[in-house]
Image 1 (cartoon, rainbow, N blue to C red):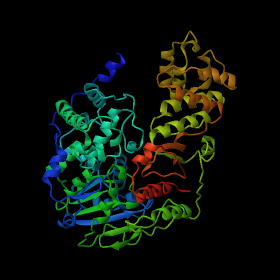
Image 2: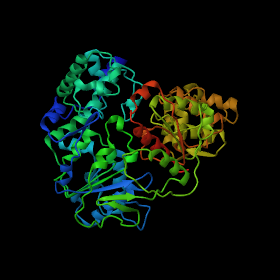
Image 3: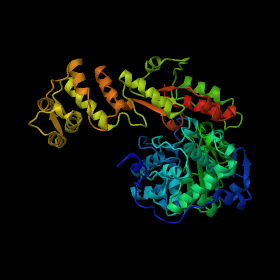
Image 4: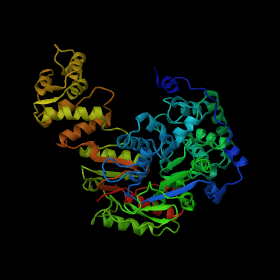
Length: 590
């Protein structure tokens, strides 16, 4: 099969055909609703009417490392505390509670904790802990094979090919934060702008409001035409985008079936998600909203901290589910502040506070540090080696504005022989297995695991294997064993044990499977030649600024390097940039 055939091939089963997304959902929303409050660049709907529909509102503000998840859900490592959901699951019918987490990873973590802490089953936890995207799929009877962002198919490429737009097939997935990366072609510009518009409840004809609108090289009419054609394409195929499903729920005024609704990371909901949440007022008894306006990092995508800030707390009875004096304090009716950071040292907290205190519209929080000390090291135009010298190989995150910057720095780590974790899976399990197997040979270890031995043999060229031993059978034999003597691996090959650089180069000169691309080959070769085989990729992580949300590390290295395109697309308001700057300083523990 050639590349062209591969690109056009549908790699999933047919869509569910449960209907098609509305082709004019945004305009339907704008024409049918009369309660929106227009804000810069989109719509937000938290009017005073929204919080007076017999629904109590509890706002939980949690600063960095103050334990929002622990407070909302519980923590398996804390014996004398019980999270709100933990207590409620123990005292009430699980059908009365529903938690909407911001990401699938956050939902999975909440499920894991609840299953460990309570008697709720995994299947029931799956039902009562979800994301807005998953809820929208349920309401519209959609399966993963129906969703463009999930399907292992090339819908966007095929559409662009049909309408004559360039779309680089190997550009990678479109993820949060990519609005700040360099667009590669008009196809990706089109889809990024269109996604931005729908998330902010803006019609296609207003595409110039998007920060990337200036990158569109065709006419206004052509953008609107293509938006209509993309809707027709999805309708013909029976496929949906996530935001199509959410918008359908908003226009249908779908409501969740629960009494107590928990929503996490409220500050990062964009207008379309806000509209979904607003539909729930008046239909649930109480909504717990957790977040931190200081940690709003998706303002470029439409998130507005004002949505969270302007929502009025409204509690009409006692709330025994909250820890009244152990984790925070009541600031106002229905407003609870978590004030103890379990991560940040004093000096780092003070630095972040200096930045965020310049933001006018925010919820004031008196946060106590976890411990004294901490260190801030500014570097002006550092070389890659100067940055590498700051790495704590056991616990470091290095953050960048965009994926391409992350990829470029990864090359410097490869050159230095330092393994790392990244979203490109440079050091995936198979690569690490190969490295560890070769390290066992190099260091004259007596044993290695069977999977390591199998990987070593699998990657050697056929000429390196003894004639009397078919390579495939040797791989299968080693893979079936829990441990293999390193001498057996040596005897199966024509090579001597790689105890010097010359012999090591022979073992690592030519890896033969498709798993080992150029960068992975160099990563393993340099790691072994520089005697860094003791380092674990999990100790150093490369990530984008947006992708680091909710994570922490002992050492944070923040790259502020940017391009004019990034500067043009960053939020124009200084307090938006201060929030981002403050958040990044709060990711570290030292």
